[in-house]
Length: 387
Ligand code: GLY
Image (cartoon, rainbow, N blue to C red):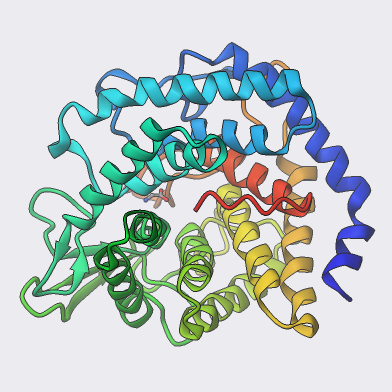
């Protein structure tokens, strides 16, 4: 079936869900204007300012506001989204006060917030913040090891698949400043991730430890998944979306092939749980832990793959994205006005029986709302790509 026909067949649902997002988020935009939310407690957004201002997810709130700004048909709502996004950007300036506290997630923090502001409104102060983020990310490059270090402190050789979502900031900066070095480092990172993080079957190593002098692999870690060798679904989703973004920015076929390979693994696994993604695709049968954020991120990547493959291949990826979004909307979206978040059932990390890795289990997380809205905006036909 063609891309257009699949969208047409689902148009009523897409418009209904977008309408519910707009109604709920235009209200929350006003209510949470002085906050930088991460999750909710008793239905109320929390606030990651103060000593949490450099928290890696802090760009998603402003980013979510820009997605809604780009897609709403209401001029009144548009003004509210912009006001909240602008405010979030100012509040986040505190994070620049000590640059040594920044980390590799500067793309998550500024590219989808300030970068989106610049793309949509031409705000030059926003452009500057995004460029500062890109310069900070580039400064993490290890020349001998040929990778971007993900962690601060003594984990000098550790890389993480999540960084595939930060390197679009480098592709952008390269074009924006006219300096190929940013793009070159991004490509080196993507090639390392393709070689060391993606397994032959399309599953993903979350964390890899490298020799800092020659880049060789010392060890792989299970990271936020169940164990070494398992597949943490959000890591797979970061890879799926990250590689198609690298393809969009570079047109290098190997990144499209890698995105497809990870997508095939993801689709095969999520099909067997009624399109509701588990937190780890290789976890024991019980307990059953889900992660809605993995599904929302993967849906965005699948839609972008569908846009970039020949006509006869599009159906596989677009239909899978819609099935997953529909399943998650039915089971996990909360449209109640007494709950600030939309998408429930996010999981920070797999919780092992011994309590190791204890993290937020089945909670709303701001990037779940962000990627769910981004996926719905794409299905509405918008070409706005914040990454
Ligand atoms: N490591 C960032 C994440 O939880 O996806």
